[in-house]
Image (tube, rainbow, N blue to C red; front, side, top):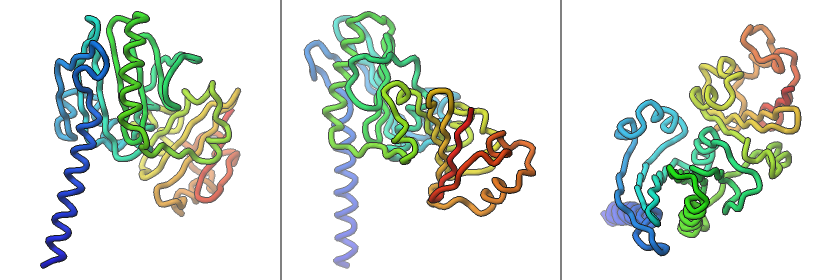
Length: 265
């Protein structure tokens, strides 16, 4: 009896803590001068299609939990702020990596994994992917986008960051970091690296990392189990499949600690 009460109280505590944490993430009026929240809507996995129609499947594939969508204004400029809560930092980075668009190099951004252009600022912090969009594209709108981003940086300080495979980490530079992609399923691969979509069709529970390095492309395929499935390993070594990527068919790959590592020209 005592154990049942303990677990019930503990579960309620966890749920309340998560709810409080979620409330802290969303924007509020006057968090900096002139900021006004005009609308806040919440979407779960069942209602996400009503917000983004055909795009919902990709988010669900990556591990979507909740979307807090807010319309805010500052100095007569309107911003659409979408706060996607994903399953974990890998999920958040992955969906960000395949949605990233026209990032400016050398701009004054705030965190390691973000992307800024005149009309959009995208951020990853912990298990959150945040998309800030304006329709003006002015220098003032960019400055305000960064101010909004700074609020999220403060709100999410201390969140665990995404961990990259060692092969990816040691090849990251300031120039290619904004081109790194992480794919976790059929739709992700179709969006992020379609050359491998046929090769990986029928497989699941994997992470495919793709990083351009000078004139080559580094691909690192890992599995959630930490072990390459035996049947997949057989596929790599057989060379009989007509839909194998050229690098795999020519045996131009390495297997290390449960990872497939490929350098493609």
